[in-house]
Image (cartoon, rainbow, N blue to C red; front, side):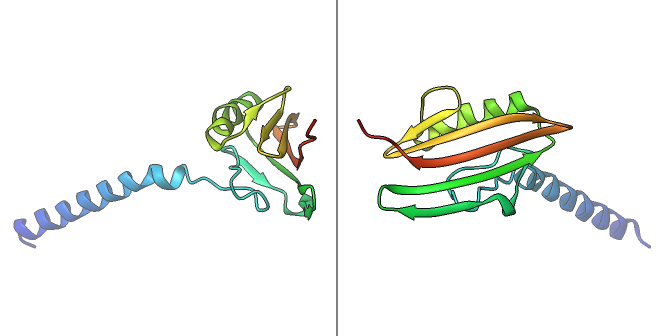
Length: 128
C-alpha cells in the first residue's frame, strides 16, 4: 500500500473522529419531557414512570400527575428545576410549588435508595 493511500485513510479517520466528537455533547444532553406536560423537562438522570401518569381536563383547568425516578443527586435535581422553571414562565411560590397563569405546579423531590423520586402535580390555581 502506498504512503499516499495510508495518509488519506488516516486523514479520513481523523475527520470522522472529529465529527463524532462534536456531536457527542448533543446526544449526551438530549432533553426529554414528561409525556403529559410537554413543556416540563426531566432533570438529567430521570426517567418517567408511565404507569403513574394521570391527566385530565376539567372546566377549571387540567390536572396532571406524574412520577419520575433515577440515579440522580436530589440537590442537583432541585437546582435543575430552580434554574429551569423560571425560564419556562413558572414563578416560585411556597417550597416546591410554582405558579403560571391559572395553574399551580408542585415538584416534590424525595431521596430514594440509590437515587431520587420526583413527583409532579399540576392543578388549577385557586383564584382569590
